[in-house]
Image (cartoon, rainbow, N blue to C red; front, side):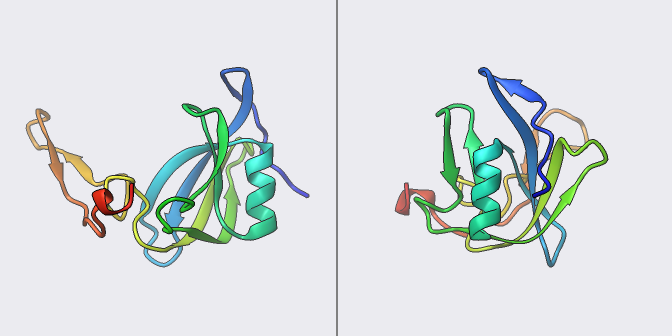
Length: 127
């Protein structure tokens, strides 16, 4: 099985960068880390799994919210240390309730962030 190069080290754990991208719209939904176990679980199940650096554990995207990511395709960068999961997103990708974690845009005067993304669920109802 082809695997990413897990060359980034955080807290003594070898990781690769994973980007989740909507397979229909190409919108970038989130960025996370994966370790070898998370990658293997993603391949085995067809559903995105990631490695939480803050919790030091594997997490299945949607285990609490039900907002899973079905992996349609996996792309590798030239060094194989970053991948893109082209996914079908159920609900929202962001824990804030937005479809994408990238819902804030820097203002024209570079002083504030403006919300530009759509909110698709109320996080208080889930978390």
